[in-house]
Every structure is written in C-alpha cells, then in structure tokens.
Length: 277
Image 1 (cartoon, rainbow, N blue to C red):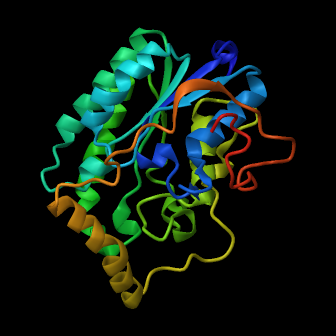
Image 2 (cartoon, rainbow, N blue to C red; image 1 turned 45 degrees about the vertical axis):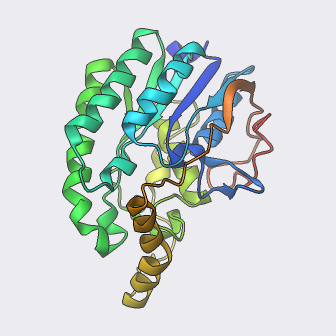
C-alpha cells in the first residue's frame, strides 16, 4: 500500500475456507492461509499491525454478511479483505445477483466506516477439472458482478481470474477446491500487489517452472470418489464442513513481519509468525 495506507494498523479478513487458510497447514498444526501471509507482509511496512480473521469454512456469501460483518465493523478495521461466493457457486440454486448483493452490502458497510477494502476474482474451475465445466458461466457472471460492486464502493480488486498460472494444479490442494501452500502464497502476493504494497509486483502471476501435470481420466475418477462424492453427501444431508466451527482469530492480535529474504513461495508453512494464531 502507498501513501494513504501508511497509518493502517488494523486488518480484518472476512470469508470462507480460503481465507480461513484451508489447504495451508491443517487443524492439528494450525492453518495459515493467504490472509495470514498478507498480514505478515503488511506488518513489514506497518509496525504494530493487528490482525483478525473471521473467516469460517463452508460459509455462503449471505452467511459471511450475517455472521461476520457486524463483528468486523466492531473491530473498526483500517483494511479489510472480503472473499466469498465459491460455496454459493457450487450450490444447485446459485443466483449470481443474490450473491453479489450480499458482497455489495459488505463492501458498502466497511467502506462507509472508512476501511480500505480488497477482494479478488475467481478462476474458472473448469480449467482445473473437466467435471466442473458447467460452473464456468457462473464464475464469469459472479466475477463481473464483483467488479461492478467493487467499482461502486472503491474496493480494490486482485484480478486473479484470467492468469493461466491460477489453474496450475501445483497451486491447488488435492481436493481442487482449496489452494495449496504455494497457492496461498500467490494469492497473498496478488492482493499485496493490488494494494500497491511496497516491494510487491506482478511476479505472482508468473508461470511455475516446468509444465503442469494435468489430471488423467483415472485421476478424475479418484478425485470424484475421494472429494466430490463426500461433498455431495454433505449437501444431501444438509451439512457443511463449517458446522460447529468458529473463527480461528476473532480478535485483533499483533503480527510479526516476514523476516528478510522470506519471499513469496518461501514463507514457512506454519503459523508461528502470526502471533496468537
């Protein structure tokens, strides 16, 4: 962030599993995720930064608005990130206008309070797995509406949707729904670049060395059995991966900055550098 952001000392992240950090660590050792990584990068330029993460896996955009907006406003953030909508995309009765309406309301409330707000666009999951091809039009529709809402409220958008690297399998976990540690690092770098954080640049979108390994037919079947089937089962039973869960970091806690030389892609996989995490 540049001039207008130099006094920012309170960062609050709202969202679902990606912002919670699923795919970067685990529940026994602790989740890190792109928002934690972004907080560490921010702390380099904002000594005394305090950070809260209200995200909970499985949450729909309407639930993020209903459950996380008021607590976020109570923390009076200088900076907030809002990323939600993927769980809605996967539901049979997806309504892009309804989802965007919830995001618009969150953007409006946070910016009205004076927070700088950032969000991002979503990659076409059909480029990750052919079985998700029917979701392509939904992704494009939601991205367009996110951009419109962001323009209305002066929200910064990290445009991750169209860069080929974002669908490199190496940036994704085995479930193809959550970023891998490297993917989370790239997301953090993309948001830092969108916020014009000193030292950030567009290298987060550079391709990884060597050709990506694309899924085979056998791999697709294994993925469907191991991840898609259980996911559908939870939906049929009316359950969510976030049932019974609460935010991992509901209050503002101090953050230790990333140490010298710990660049994107080299940030450690634990949560020790985020104090209290």
